[in-house]
Structures are given as structure tokens and as C-alpha cells.
Length: 205
Ligand code: HEM
Image (tube, rainbow, N blue to C red; front, side, top):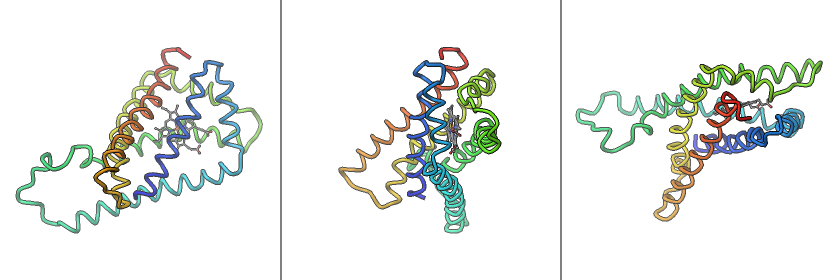
């Protein structure tokens, strides 16, 4: 679960980086070029298969872990002040993950399906930037995206350091550093993602 988590964390850096080209304010020219390269390059296409396999593995591992935890303690603790020894977001990784999955289903319907149809039918150049503009012209969709990004923030905020802990990295000196990097990463990635729908809706770009 730690490894697939780190793989997905890496994907989000690339995804936020590529999408941030929209902020160049060149009417999506650079963004469309980079997106076109990404969807036509065979190495990236190969990695894309790995991405979906990684995502499914991460979900299955999460479900297995949840079941293992339930089996390990079928009878609840008589006295358990969960808030005293863990944070609400570490206890809510499952529900945050489910919210993210719902967000992803909608997200794929918006962007992934259309891109692939255009790629395989090949009858028109696909303008992803214009498609983004269309999707984010609806306030309610922007609202759902922002909720999805809030869920993503808490999932990453806990998941980042948790992934390293699962892999056995638990060190007096390095764990606080990993925690700090994880906090910075979660804040920067989520602010970038949140700015995308907001900037388009408010017509800043
Ligand atoms: C709100 C900001 C976001 C915008 C504007 C955005 C935009 C896009 C676009 C345009 C594509 C299609 C790319 C292409 O086919 O070339 C895409 C694909 C994708 N997005 Fe996002 N995205 C956002 C946030 C997210 C988040 C938060 C996640 C994950 C938690 C995510 C996961 C994915 C995945 C898995 C794909 C399919 C990958 C692929 O095409 O290979 N996106 N996104």
C-alpha cells in the first residue's frame, strides 16, 4: 500500500505540473501541446496502464487492510478514546478514499473518456483546454471539484508520511522531515488543483 501510494503521489506531481501550463495564459496553447504529447507518446501510454493498475491495487489493498483490522478485533474496545491517540483524518482514510473515488469517476467522465474517443477516432484535434473551460463554466461542478480536492488534501496529508511508515521508515531524524515534506507537498498540490477550476470559472484565464 505504501509503494502504490508513493506511485500515485508521483503521478499527481506530473499531473499538476502538466495542468499548470494553463496558467501561462496563452489560451491553452502550451497546455494542449504538452497534453497532446502525453497522450501520444508510447512510453507515457505504457505508464498510464501502470497508473490504473496502481490505482486499482491501492484500492484493493485498502479494502484488505480494512478487513484485516476488523478481523483482528471483532469485539470493539470497551474503552477507546480514539481522538486521544490518533487524528480524525488518519481514522478516516477509508471514507476520504471513497470520496476521492467518486470524484475520480466524475473526473474520468469529464476528461478521460473524451480524450480517448478523440484519440481513437482521430477525426478532429482535441482541444483539452476548451473542454476544461466548458466543464468549469458550471458553478456546481467547480463546487464538487473543490470538495474532491479537500478530501484529497486530508488523504495526502496523512497518506504521505503513512506510506513511508508502512515501508518501515520510522526514524527520529527523518520522520519529522518526511512529515514536513508531506505537508508542503499536500498544500502545494491541492492549491494548484483548486486554482484550476476556480481560475477558469472566474475567467482569470
Ligand atoms: C482540479 C484539477 C484537475 C484538473 C483540471 C484535471 C484535468 C485533467 C485532464 C484534462 C485530464 C485528461 C488528460 C489527458 O487525457 O491528456 C485528466 C486525467 C486524469 N486525472 Fe485529472 N485533473 C484534476 C485533478 C485531478 C485529481 C485531484 C486527480 C486524482 C486524485 C486526478 C486524476 C486523474 C487521472 C487518474 C487521469 C487519467 C490519467 C491519464 O489520462 O492518463 N486529476 N485530468
